[in-house]
Amino acid sequence: MPSKRIHFLALALAACALSAPCAFAQGAAQGAAQGAAAEAAPAGASFSFAYVHTKGDKFRALSTVDESVYVNHRFAHRSEILNRIAYEIADAGADGSWGLLRGTFQTAERPKGESTFVITDSYDSEFTRDRLGRYTIDPKYYMPVVRDVPSFPDRPLSPGDSWTAAGEERHDFRRVFGIPDPYVIPIEVRYRYEGPVQKAGKSLLLISASYTVFVRPKEPRAYTEVFPIEIAGFSDQKIYWDPDMGAPLSYEEKFDLSFDWSDGANVDYRGSATSEVLEATLMNRESLKTEIEKGVAGLANVSVAATAAGVTISIEDIKFEADSARLKDSELSKVARIAQILKAYPDRDILVTGYTAAAGYAPGRQKLSEERAKAVAERLAAMGARAPERIRATGRGDEAPVADNATEAGRARNRRVEITLLEN
Image (tube, rainbow, N blue to C red):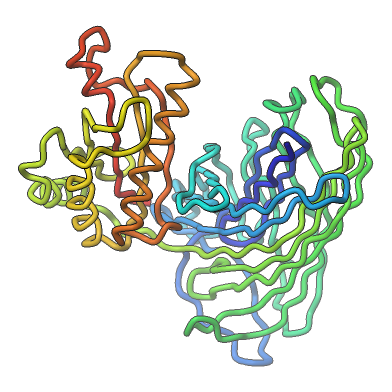
């Protein structure tokens, strides 16, 4: 079974993370930061591109990828992938010329014919970026995959000006292929400042960026499966720079990357991607918790808590048909009422997490918890709580029990679904 190319974008440029048949490798791209307001360059005027960082700012980047996968030059499948990067500027220079970015890179996939995006992987990372877009990052972090992109010369640029700058892609092949070291692909990016444009009612500055890849890497020092012997392809992008933010606001990309593997297989990934940056507004957790508690008053086994991620509504002892993810009729009214409450907070994304009691086969518990989270997420989307792209589901099996699994009462509480309104 061929697997997917996972494509992360945070705020500027695509991150191409590719895989071999029957496995996948994770990918991510880089973050961007909000800064002090700058005046947009008028048509024909020069402009000095530079990131501006403000300590304490929080953002999230949402990217969607429409990708077709070909195995041995035959169409295999089409994937729809949603990537979400939530991050903050944990520290910054007094003049905004550098920033320490901390964030979580998360990818979710929507299976063909379904409405819910299910989280497949999540990474934490932190790195420092200077005003021209260069990174300083500990080798232990695998995200972002694409680094030092976009980066700029230290001079004003006029429409039509071009430049080149080095970057790299850094992939994590540990879990699938047993390759212990980050897999580094150097890239040379060609840039052109196209000039001012209007997009979605905003005055932005358009940068085109492209690079080709042709690498015949050495055999890694250790591996358990196959490894790439040749990587070739291209990425063409449009990056929309927001002079008020001091960072990219959105981007569009077309890509085609082909991997030849040591077992003779070829996997080709072709498609397009888009991304947008959204600033996170501060959440008053306690106030929101109080409001939602009033809304769910009287619903059996429903509680509300302020959490690190936001505000979480927990439905304990949630009733499904035996060993299935089909909600019982008695639970549908609960989910409907919660959906109405969630509509009052449209700016917040939603995470639905499923849990099981510690009973049965561990892999089965994990799968069941994910399917039950999906069932609730699908109901919320169908009831208009959010567009499907704003809801993600994940399962955690019997992790994080809230009661003793040694008793039936405890196991009932642990069979729960949590619905979190996310701050960022």
